[in-house]
Length: 323
Image (cartoon, rainbow, N blue to C red; front, side, top):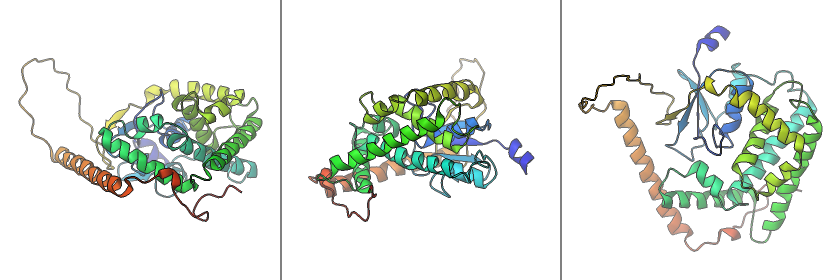
């Protein structure tokens, strides 16, 4: 079983690189980092066809596919399947469990708030919608802002209080993590998924969020967390960047298309090649995607026209409780 896994070729499909990061997506980046910390060989492909798909990132090898929106996400699925497991020695440690919970909830929520509500949305549009027509990207962005406000239970009346609570929890998490880390290389002796999520958060916050970001400024108060991010980025992400060859993934299926390179230097005009069935299928899917997104935009604009998103009313039981 182990030998078969070592022989298999795995491909991580993520959103495109941006902000000087191998992938600009705050959900995709930790998966990339996890594989790097585990010294797990993989190829890196990018998918721009479905920018708001919950399936991204995913990892595939032959008929095996682990999606982000299934079984606790890619990292948990890889651990359960015995493919990549960095947590075997830590899962029963209470302090490790609480630290991971803080990173995956309080800090993840703070990033989500910054991307969609606490900023002008420039970073979010660059990550998710920059390849879409402006109108579609704008409408999808507004729709996601509405969804995020609902998730946090943000209304016009409680917006300031909710924001203060989100940043307060993030600052508490930074303080606890900084104290635990001290001057160590990793939070607990050797790398684990806790480092995966924290390193992803640190790099994304420093490089993807604007300089005026409240979250970024709070992180900069902890010098050892900054040094931690810079050191691990240098050792694991930049030093071994040649181990995976980025390609743009043309479709969100579990089948990667690889074509041999043509080194011919002939200048003679080549006859027009007939499209394969796979290429025709992809074109149909792309047209269908744009059509459905356009319909969604028209419906969204017609329904929400004139609606004040800042006055979204959400029952307190449906939102997150910060008490």
